[in-house]
Length: 104
Image: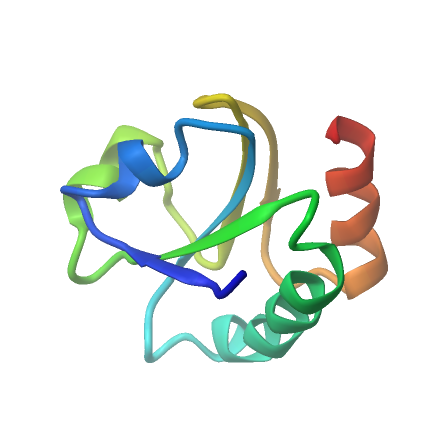
């Protein structure tokens, strides 16, 4: 499964079913650029367990505001549309896979 780029219009639909890791990011954000390849690795290895969705906060401020995202990257883990975990800032792959596995 490929990483999905969501918008304010598609975010609820993209995060509504199953386990979804949503990455709130912006193109100018250094730590966001650092976490991108980590998310690609997780997508390649765990796509049977989790869907990864990216939301550019500059272009989609409504959704970022709805979830109270104040700093980026913020990663929210959704399970069937409900937030079950949150990570703020860069995290190593092991930390993210542990969070995903905990809720899978």
